[in-house]
Structure formats: C-alpha cells, structure tokens
Amino acid sequence: MGKSDWSDETKFSSKGGEGIYLNDGNLRMKINADVVIGQEDFVSGDVNQGWSPDESTLNSPYGINLKNEKLIVADIYNHRVLIYNETPTKNNASADVVIGQLDFTSNEANQGGSASANTLNLPIHAFSDGTRLFVADGNNNRVLIYNEIPTENNATADVVIGQLDFTSTDVNQGNANPAANTLNYPFAVFSDGEKLFIAERNSYRLLIYNSIPTENNASADVVIGQPDFISADINQGGDPAANTAYHFSGVFYDGKNLFINDMGNNRVLVYNEIPTENNAPADIVIGQEDFNTSVIYTEEDISARTLYGAHLLSICKERIFLPLTSSRRLLILNATPTENNSPTDEVIGQPDFISSDAYATSKYTFGRPDWVSTEEEVLAVTDEANNRVLLFNKQQETSTLTSSTRRRRNLGRNRQRRLFCWERNISNIQSNSNL
Image 1 (tube, one colour):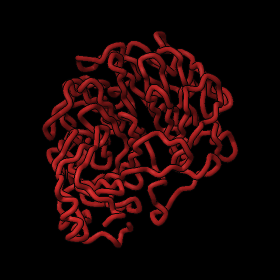
Image 2 (image 1 turned 135 degrees about the vertical axis):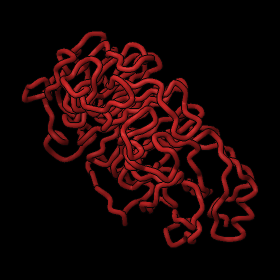
Image 3 (image 1 turned 90 degrees about the horizontal axis):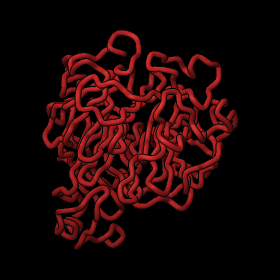
Image 4 (image 1 turned 30 degrees about the vertical axis):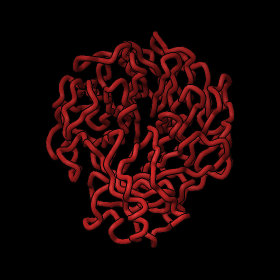
C-alpha cells in the first residue's frame, strides 16, 4: 500500500490521533511511547529544556544502552554520560550518576581544560556488558573502560584505548596513518563480556580485540574494512565491496552473527561468525542489492529494503532493529537475513514503508531516531533532534487504524499486541491480502 491508501485520520497530524504506526503487512496500528526522558512532555524538544543542563535534561542524546534495568545515555553536547539506575517509568526522570562532569549542571568539553581520566569530549556511545562501562569518547579519539559501572559522579576510567595515556587526544596519536593501537573518532563500541569491538568512523574500519584490554594503549587483533591496520581509505580507495567500509557507525554481536552499520554505504554488513583475519568479507548485505552498490535513496525510492542514515542497530530475540535518521523511521527484521537485500518486516514512525515525512514533536513521531537499545521489557530510541529518549514498554493497548468499516470490524477485536522483541501472537487478525 502506498501513501494514497491512507486516509487523513491515519496521518501524523493534529487531526490524526496518537500513535507511532507499526506496519508489518498484516496490521497497522498506532503505538505511543510510554515514557520520555530529557523533556517534561512529549511535545517539547528544546536543548536542555530551554535552560542550563541538570539531571533531567539532554543536549543531542546519541548512543544508548539498556542493561540489567539500567539506562545509559551518551549526552553528546553536554559532554557527559548519564546513568539511570533503574529504567525510568515516568517522564522527565532524573539521572542518578553523571560521567564526564563534576556535577549535573556542568557541561564543558573536558571540564573546561585538558583531557583526563574523568573527562569527555563529544561522547558518541556508551555501552555496558553488565559489569564494565565502555565509552566512545569521539573528539578525544579514545575509548574509556570503567571496570565497574560508576555509582558516583565524575568517576575516573580505568583503561584508555587509542591513546598512550589519559591526557593524550591526538588523532592516530599524532601519526599520519592509523595503527592497531590508534583511533580516529570512535563512533560505537560493543562487548559480549569477552571481546571488544570498536567501530571507527574516520578510519573506515572496525577493530576487534580478542580479549578486553586491561592496560592502556592496547592493540587490536583484527581489523575489518581495511586490508591492514595502517590503511584508512574509503572503500579501500575503490568501489564498495564485501570487505570495505565507508563510515562504520554501529556494531552488534548476537552470539552468532556480527552486524556492522556501514552508514556511508547505506547498508548493514552481516558476518556469519566473528572474523579472525584482517579484511574479511561479509556474508550478507542489508540495504543494497549487492556488495558493490551504495545507492543513496531519495524520498521517492524509500522502501522496506532501503537504508539511509542507519546508525547503531540492536537485536533482541533474533529481531533486528534499525533506526534510520534521514527517513525518520525504525525498521524491524524478524530474523537474520540469509540473502542480500532482504526486505524488512515492520516499520515504526511512518505510516508505510515508502514514507519519510517530518511531523510535529509528539509521543508517536521521530525527529531523528539515531540509536536504539532493547531489553526484555523496554525498547529505547534516542530522538536526537528533539533532545530526548523515548521508551516503549513490552505490551500496549492499541487502537487499530483502517481504511474501511470491514477492516475495523475484523482487526478491532484484539486490542492487545506484544511488541518489539517479544512473542507477538495475534488472534482474530486478517492480513491485508484477505481484505
């Protein structure tokens, strides 16, 4: 179904009611976020709520992580990471701990001075393996490791990756070329508790550490996207291929497959196992017809297969969640693809797979969905443009939107649906093809 199939009541407008539209080909319904973080309500979007920073405000939130009921948010332009000891259940919740600043009301890069073990300068992503905290400290060209998740403000990191020490910040440690122990704007970090993965945006590569470093300036064991550790060319100086990169912006390992967001090539690379040698080719590509194309799709070309502006993905119980900043939507695949260019199964944030419209700030729209994280009970999405994080709970009451009385009658019987990474058994539902 295209845009013309939607009546006025199903559009994101002041007349359209409330709800992010989830469309899986069988059912369309409105889904509201349950909780907003960083704003007092769902219609506000000001930087730091129009004031100075405090424990409840945000300024361009980016990488987030849900782990063991904690919520961890990289608050980029406040140069800090916020930790909520429990996943918030009410709007405008206050964080419990701040990293990178002395207190919640400070927000200078490197605390107004030089880099150290307790400062940050544009932290892009924060991730926890359940024990440690990892922070991709973008403008300091390093990744910080805290051996335990901090419980007090202004905590100091235990290990630094990408620099000789905590006071150094040079790109590639001041060298013309990268090396196995250097970084140039690390963008995302992931760990399964054993290995460490760092997506490095400006050297167009992914670094793999076979064990989590315990000393500063550790060298990676494997590089993906480049032929060796000293190369840093976009697509290795040629056209895209199964072994090249153009702005790696996210990484996730589900215990079997390794997923890498290749934002510059508008695709996600899937490796059926963690590579053990440099320059390994991917097995599957999502978002492109093959490994040799990197089409940037216009609004007229957007579909269930296209990716534009894909940042960090998340996986929960085999379901893959892909936030797309440029088309203001979140795509979902119900299983890991086995073929190139597989279509996604569901879309959130737009009424169909071919829409990418911008709408007023609300509980059912995305201004710029950059990052996503999932845990058993919650889906979290950063909406950077609106300086907020949206949280969706496990099960919601939903009202089905239809274009005919018959469809209302057939679909409206069951008003509960399990969402996101949980079981989604629906009774009394007919597919679009049968209507």
